[in-house]
Length: 101
Image (tube, rainbow, N blue to C red):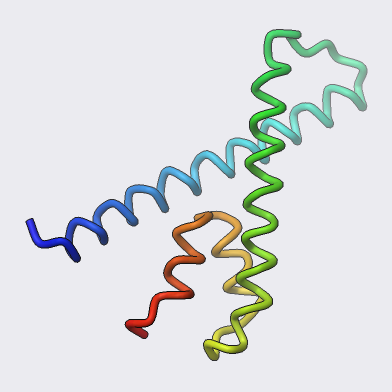
C-alpha cells in the first residue's frame, strides 16, 4: 500500500472517530450540567470518564485556538479552521501545517 494512501486513510479514520468522541464528550458535559441544575444524581463511577473528557476537550480547545491563530498565514478562515481543528484534533493541525498545500 502506498504511504500517502495509508496516511490519508488513517487520517480519515481518526477524523471521524475524533469528531464522534468530542461530540460525545460535549454531550456528557451537557448531561452533567443538566444533572447539577436539576439536582439529579450521576453515578460516582463516571467521575474518571468526566475527567478524561474534560482533558480531551481542553486539549482540543487549545489545538483549535492555535489553528485559528495560524490560519491567516495559510490564507484560511480562522473561525472555520479553529472549529474544524477543535473537532478533529491534531490531524487538523497537521493538515494546516502540511507543506503540500
